[in-house]
Length: 169
Image 1 (cartoon, helix red, strand yellow):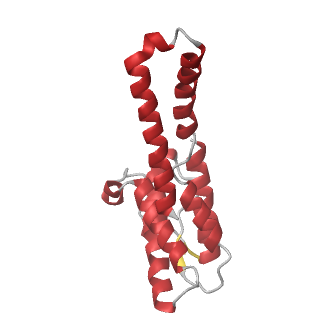
Image 2 (cartoon, rainbow, N blue to C red):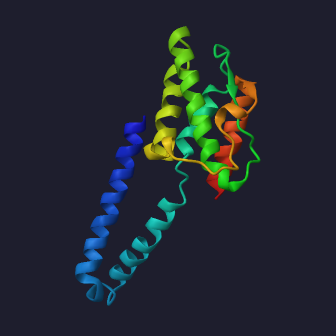
């Protein structure tokens, strides 16, 4: 599933690049006719559409898949959803790290949602950026272990709120 999304994204980038080359090599001659203006308009609009896509959309989709799971029973450090914006990245990092705990539990118990949990972990790491998992945090931000432990359902609800908040920015 993730491969297909990546493939679609790559096709979009290829199309944008081809349009860029076309415009770059024939920019002035293209603007002299109707077809050139249409191509110019499409090139101007395509990047804006792609930029509006939240990089956390896949994580949100998979969170929806696992939120009703009955075979995941763990207590997890659950970050507050109303943390300062300066702490947003460390909060997301905590959720991603705790997802690894869910994944380990699923592998042990052979959960029905193991693949979805793995997708959340992989896509979360990709969206956050590998280097961010080990980055330093502000002194005012809490460490994961400082947050209250909550059940799986509460953890997922908080994780969804934090990701939705991130998508709005």
